[in-house]
Image (cartoon, rainbow, N blue to C red; front, side, top):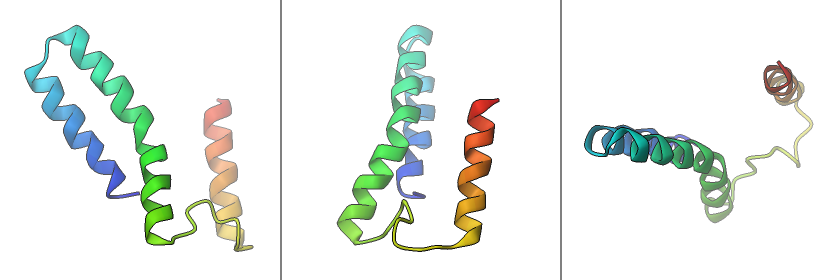
Length: 72
């Protein structure tokens, strides 16, 4: 996920050089593409990003807090 998070840098650079309308669209696409890119990179490196093979309580708690934040 940190590698995929570099899209924030791309969004910042595009925001500096594009007009406001185009920059907002670029920001929309960059932020929406971080998680799918993270999934793709995790699949290529053999990681289990979604945690489907582990039964860790902290992973469950983290997932529930994300769900709670999204429901707010």
